[in-house]
Image 1 (cartoon, one colour):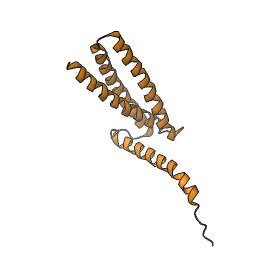
Image 2 (spheres, helix red, strand yellow):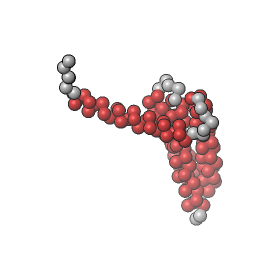
Image 3 (cartoon, helix red, strand yellow):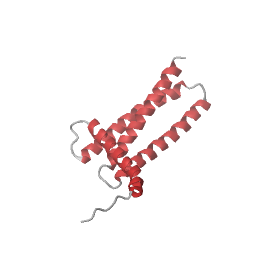
Image 4 (cartoon, one colour):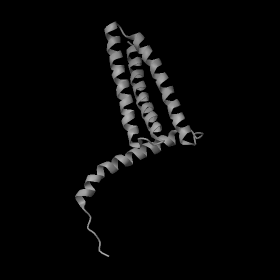
Length: 137
Protein backbone atom coordinates (compact mmCIF):
# COMPACT_ATOMS: atom_id res chain seq x y z
CA UNK A 1 0.00 0.00 0.00
CA UNK A 2 1.54 3.27 -1.13
CA UNK A 3 1.25 6.46 0.90
CA UNK A 4 0.15 9.47 -1.13
CA UNK A 5 1.96 12.76 -0.52
CA UNK A 6 -0.11 15.61 0.87
CA UNK A 7 -0.86 18.44 -1.54
CA UNK A 8 0.07 21.42 0.66
CA UNK A 9 -1.42 24.01 -1.69
CA UNK A 10 -4.80 22.33 -1.51
CA UNK A 11 -4.57 22.03 2.27
CA UNK A 12 -3.65 25.72 2.64
CA UNK A 13 -6.66 26.78 0.58
CA UNK A 14 -9.00 24.93 2.93
CA UNK A 15 -7.62 26.42 6.15
CA UNK A 16 -9.57 29.73 6.05
CA UNK A 17 -12.91 27.97 5.55
CA UNK A 18 -12.07 25.49 8.31
CA UNK A 19 -11.21 28.39 10.65
CA UNK A 20 -14.53 30.07 9.87
CA UNK A 21 -16.41 26.84 10.51
CA UNK A 22 -14.63 26.30 13.81
CA UNK A 23 -15.29 29.89 14.93
CA UNK A 24 -18.96 29.58 14.00
CA UNK A 25 -19.32 26.33 15.90
CA UNK A 26 -17.54 27.79 18.93
CA UNK A 27 -19.86 30.79 18.79
CA UNK A 28 -22.89 28.53 18.60
CA UNK A 29 -21.59 26.48 21.53
CA UNK A 30 -21.00 29.64 23.61
CA UNK A 31 -24.51 30.78 22.78
CA UNK A 32 -25.93 27.41 23.82
CA UNK A 33 -24.11 27.66 27.14
CA UNK A 34 -25.54 31.11 27.78
CA UNK A 35 -29.14 29.93 27.39
CA UNK A 36 -31.12 29.05 30.50
CA UNK A 37 -31.01 25.42 31.60
CA UNK A 38 -34.71 24.80 30.93
CA UNK A 39 -34.35 25.04 27.14
CA UNK A 40 -33.61 21.47 26.08
CA UNK A 41 -34.82 20.88 22.54
CA UNK A 42 -33.64 22.85 19.52
CA UNK A 43 -37.11 24.35 19.19
CA UNK A 44 -37.03 25.48 22.84
CA UNK A 45 -33.55 26.96 22.43
CA UNK A 46 -34.66 28.83 19.30
CA UNK A 47 -37.72 30.17 21.15
CA UNK A 48 -35.57 31.26 24.10
CA UNK A 49 -33.11 33.01 21.79
CA UNK A 50 -36.00 34.86 20.12
CA UNK A 51 -37.39 35.84 23.53
CA UNK A 52 -33.96 37.13 24.60
CA UNK A 53 -33.72 39.20 21.43
CA UNK A 54 -37.20 40.68 21.91
CA UNK A 55 -36.28 41.65 25.48
CA UNK A 56 -33.04 43.33 24.39
CA UNK A 57 -34.84 45.09 21.52
CA UNK A 58 -37.52 46.43 23.90
CA UNK A 59 -34.80 47.79 26.21
CA UNK A 60 -33.05 49.37 23.23
CA UNK A 61 -36.26 51.07 22.06
CA UNK A 62 -36.89 52.47 25.54
CA UNK A 63 -33.42 54.01 25.75
CA UNK A 64 -33.62 55.21 22.13
CA UNK A 65 -36.83 57.13 22.93
CA UNK A 66 -35.15 58.71 25.97
CA UNK A 67 -32.21 59.84 23.84
CA UNK A 68 -34.61 61.29 21.24
CA UNK A 69 -36.35 63.26 24.00
CA UNK A 70 -33.03 64.83 25.08
CA UNK A 71 -31.90 65.96 21.65
CA UNK A 72 -31.83 69.73 21.19
CA UNK A 73 -33.54 70.07 17.80
CA UNK A 74 -35.22 68.31 14.90
CA UNK A 75 -31.96 68.11 12.91
CA UNK A 76 -30.37 66.01 15.69
CA UNK A 77 -33.46 63.82 15.92
CA UNK A 78 -33.43 63.26 12.15
CA UNK A 79 -29.73 62.33 12.19
CA UNK A 80 -30.22 59.82 15.01
CA UNK A 81 -33.24 58.28 13.27
CA UNK A 82 -31.24 57.84 10.06
CA UNK A 83 -28.36 56.32 12.00
CA UNK A 84 -30.69 53.97 13.87
CA UNK A 85 -32.41 52.79 10.69
CA UNK A 86 -29.01 52.10 9.11
CA UNK A 87 -27.89 50.28 12.25
CA UNK A 88 -31.05 48.08 12.30
CA UNK A 89 -30.46 47.17 8.64
CA UNK A 90 -26.83 46.28 9.48
CA UNK A 91 -27.85 44.24 12.54
CA UNK A 92 -30.40 42.19 10.62
CA UNK A 93 -28.11 41.63 7.61
CA UNK A 94 -25.21 40.67 9.87
CA UNK A 95 -27.40 38.23 11.81
CA UNK A 96 -28.57 36.66 8.54
CA UNK A 97 -24.97 36.27 7.42
CA UNK A 98 -24.01 34.76 10.78
CA UNK A 99 -26.89 32.25 10.63
CA UNK A 100 -26.10 31.33 7.03
CA UNK A 101 -23.41 28.94 8.25
CA UNK A 102 -26.29 26.70 9.39
CA UNK A 103 -28.52 27.48 6.39
CA UNK A 104 -31.56 25.26 6.38
CA UNK A 105 -30.58 23.68 9.69
CA UNK A 106 -32.63 23.73 12.85
CA UNK A 107 -29.95 25.78 14.65
CA UNK A 108 -30.04 28.66 12.13
CA UNK A 109 -32.67 30.63 14.12
CA UNK A 110 -30.56 30.21 17.25
CA UNK A 111 -27.57 31.77 15.52
CA UNK A 112 -29.72 34.48 13.92
CA UNK A 113 -31.41 35.60 17.14
CA UNK A 114 -28.22 35.16 19.14
CA UNK A 115 -26.36 37.53 16.82
CA UNK A 116 -29.24 40.01 16.84
CA UNK A 117 -29.25 39.94 20.65
CA UNK A 118 -25.50 40.44 20.89
CA UNK A 119 -25.51 43.40 18.49
CA UNK A 120 -28.62 44.90 20.12
CA UNK A 121 -27.03 44.77 23.57
CA UNK A 122 -23.93 46.44 22.18
CA UNK A 123 -26.02 49.23 20.62
CA UNK A 124 -27.98 49.54 23.87
CA UNK A 125 -24.75 50.17 25.80
CA UNK A 126 -23.72 52.78 23.23
CA UNK A 127 -27.02 54.65 23.54
CA UNK A 128 -26.96 54.35 27.35
CA UNK A 129 -23.52 56.01 27.39
CA UNK A 130 -24.83 58.74 25.12
CA UNK A 131 -27.89 59.17 27.36
CA UNK A 132 -25.68 59.45 30.44
CA UNK A 133 -23.22 61.87 28.82
CA UNK A 134 -25.86 64.00 27.10
CA UNK A 135 -28.18 63.95 30.12
CA UNK A 136 -25.40 65.26 32.38
CA UNK A 137 -24.95 68.45 30.34
